View 1 (cartoon, rainbow, N blue to C red):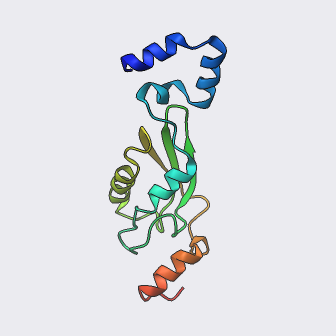
View 2 (view 1 turned 60 degrees about the vertical axis):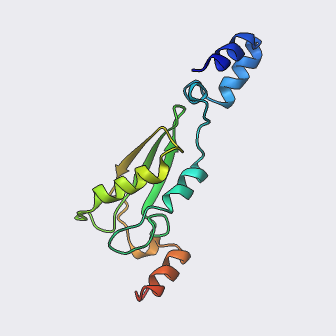
Length: 136
């Protein structure tokens, strides 16, 4: 915490301090950052590309859910096109790089239910796959 932030905390009226904490959790306020939004996190995940297909994990429909806690720690529920995929480490590394500076930490919760299928691919993902020669 910087001296400037400490001074501001001491000057606040109790009601104002409570309102500020509700709007911006204490852990994020201490670092001078705000808690990321789900939209910001999903936007960053467009930079995470499935190494086998060459399409981002969002448009492939691999991202099932996103949660960001008050400490700006994100948990992403994600699946893979196959449970036998040997490239989970590559995808995790890409996701950490893509979200660095947006969230304090990223946790990926690999989920297998419901199983991924081509029906989860977005229209944009289908266009990208067609451009690569896939018949979807």
